[in-house]
Picture (cartoon, rainbow, N blue to C red):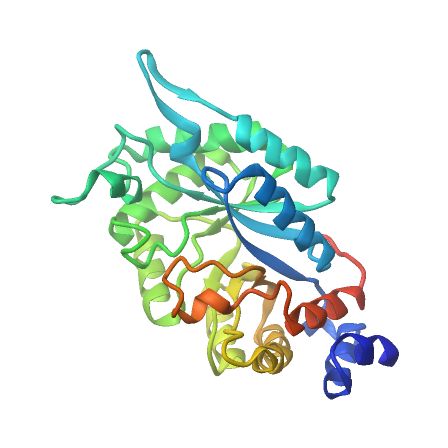
Length: 318
């Protein structure tokens, strides 16, 4: 084990690898991949390359976006489904022995209840007018995917308006309708909220409006991770806690990223995190100067850290 640590990440992090080898329950699971794959829009060749990289890192769960408005669309006779992209991706993930955490984003055209002044291009961010109708389509997609998807996350960062244009109550009613229609047949998480300050108040209101889910989901970066994870764990109660986005910028110093992840992953585990998803690749979604633009681990020293941690323990069921 010490030789593995020296080869992968250097002697300074031997202690973390020893913990990963099974020193306690705080580090019992693999570090998973937040892939930045979008089913609708990421080319298939790129999807397969990223899933292959995720598996090479030792992850066995990959978080990716499945846009409902890319599968369900209006037809002259109502609405129809196009499962081709989903089926192809699931088939490849099965061949790679990867389980999928699917982020179900978006409202199909013709179903939206948008705030006044919403641009047509942003209408997919709007809540549905009829939660029950939306739930029928959402659960039909879940049924079609079956065991090809490990868990379903309803929306990404719904507490932030860049992703979701509805109220917490609108979100809660839809998630409640999905959960009721699913009848416990699928693992469902709340949409990963963007931290404690905006996320927990949003979820309190959503739960009061009817939101139901089996796994607590939050994004944590920055400092005081153990105490913040513990606060999230208390909020979610008996539900498992999944940190579905975690990372640190590699610019200007890629070794600072390694040092950060070396301490942050055990801190999140100690705070109660059951699964941790580290950003796999760089995507300048928020511009090249954003700290998020360099928090991927591919091709960086942090890759060896994550591979070393995952190689140090066997896969376990989620």
